[in-house]
Length: 307
Image (cartoon, rainbow, N blue to C red):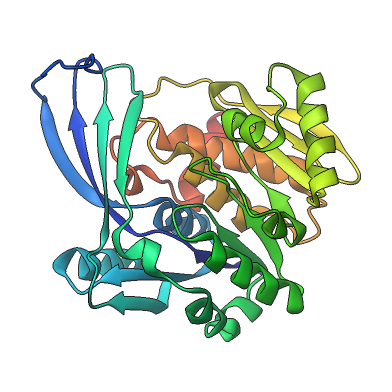
């Protein structure tokens, strides 16, 4: 039986500009090409969950514009339930501008637009959507007040909550108290705990600090190195698969979405689910664009079979 995943998050139209290298301050460079695609951390995570086999629904907000209709259609194409997406008649759909260099590294500028307009009351009104999920995932590209409201509803219905605290921001401590699993990268983890991530001992220290702040379970993604995990029962490190990265956009989002498709709500299979998530992420970075590069369950399984 497949997991049921609800994502509260951002919907952005991504414009990617390919450059030989990142510009220096005050420097003008020509781009090699320009592409546009559906994106946003929330949308990417939802698509990753859906393509990996989860029954997925989305809570978010778009503008009353072509970009918004494009985003909803893009999610529908992956059989994601979009009935809880709200149309804002005053603010346009979110967008992101991505600079991508020849090494596959990126720099991203995000315009929040309608993503920043979703309100706590609007999320609470989607209680039935949250209640039927196994997992509720959210990030920081929508307001924290909406996150807190959603997580409180989730806990009333025994739904496991997953927080991806990205982009890094000062966090309302009340959110951590209703978070079951927090998934930052090493930079975001250090910003939240004040403990720099340098080795396993420092990751253990981050896990202890998060427990003090109210979160019992932690995953720290460490780019091409892998992912550290700590639960109430176990901890460890799962190495990443070694591949040549073409575009790292949405690697972390793919990881979280794919993870949610395989994880048991009690997190008892976390190590196995992490291997699946790492494989999915490794496939994403080998393609161009965020959403177009997110793999399906069959593609992940085929890559695993090859070893």
